[in-house]
Image 1 (cartoon, rainbow, N blue to C red):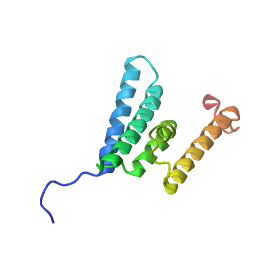
Image 2 (image 1 turned 90 degrees about the vertical axis):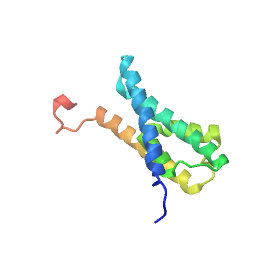
Image 3 (image 1 turned 120 degrees about the vertical axis):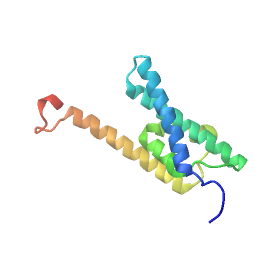
Image 4 (image 1 turned 30 degrees about the vertical axis):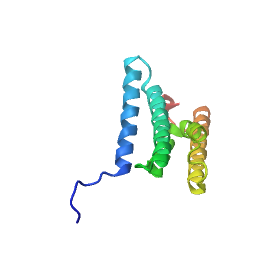
Length: 133
């Protein structure tokens, strides 16, 4: 066992940073009288862009990197538009095939879920109570 301070998990550090950005954006939206969902969407995309930008800079400067699973989680939670924009803008995470495949699978799942939700809303099942239609 080595002496010194215990190391924090990069996943926890960067996840907490993203959570703080999203929470702040939601609080600002509520304070402005906007729907919290709007704050969430803005916050998760802002956090995603910030994480990609930081990770690109960290890669160049040989600093603590954002784990790929954090980048995938924020994309999955709604940050995929900012992830795609950040990949293009920062020219980051565009060469690693396994990362790109995972990212595009996330996008496909999101599009399928949105399409299913829209279809469900237009064609609610007969067993669904009228209050939920």
